[in-house]
Amino acid sequence: MSPVTLDPKNLSSGNIYDLMASLIVPRPIAFVSTLSASGIPNLAPFSFFSMGGVNPPSVVFSPGFRFDGTPKDSLQNITVTGEFVISMVTREMAEGMNATAAGLPSDESEWDLAGFTPVSSEAVKPARVLESPASFECKLFEIVRHGEQSVYVIGEIVRFHVDGNLLRDNSVESLKPISRMGGSFYADLDAMELFTMERPR
Ligand SMILES: Cc1cc2nc3c(=O)[nH]c(=O)nc-3n(C[C@H](O)[C@H](O)[C@H](O)COP(=O)(O)O)c2cc1C
Image 1 (cartoon, rainbow, N blue to C red):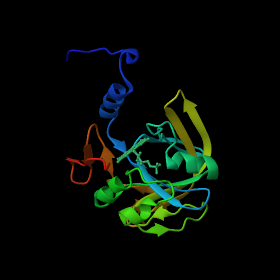
Image 2: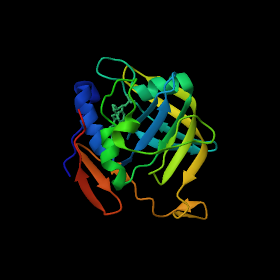
Image 3: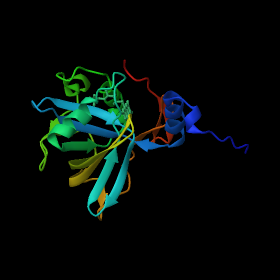
Image 4: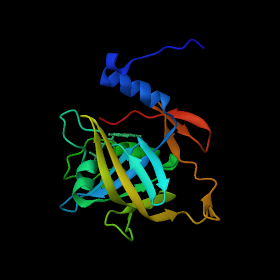
């Protein structure tokens, strides 16, 4: 090993993104479903995503801001409605998930674009993704802003939905979601291989 030490003060935001996104891996992908104030459904992937705690069950993900400084639709919708659903993403869902990362106008729904099937939630209004083996209905706990660009959306899970074929004694042994790596790389934990997908423009 030949350690290199970097001070983030000397790096651009782009450099820091590349560094962190390739070091903090693999990251599971939160496929986030929300509704706008006027009820337009929105679906978008976020890999800055983690489990928070269990009592109450808590998750956190980080939607950044667009280059023009406006909040992404998911953040805007959660700010207004206080609700979202996170679905996990499998290899079969990968291409469709990637398609939803296109920057659509906020009055257009990514659901139509990607061909996923909405299923009504029990405790919140946004739908979950039928094709996903596991989804979490969430109510907003808090949005924490750290500086100009970093936002943490903390949610409390109010319902778990899990494919019953995978569930044994409250635990799942073979979920095998895809995960985000650095650059255009993804890890397929089922096939135990890396693959690439370019983000849509
Ligand atoms: C696999 C994947 C992971 C992503 N993770 C994030 C993320 O953690 N934070 C973020 O701000 N954008 C992330 N993006 C980009 C957003 O999905 C993209 O900006 C999207 O258009 C936001 O949609 P919205 O405006 O409907 O919320 C990711 C994209 C992909 C394909």
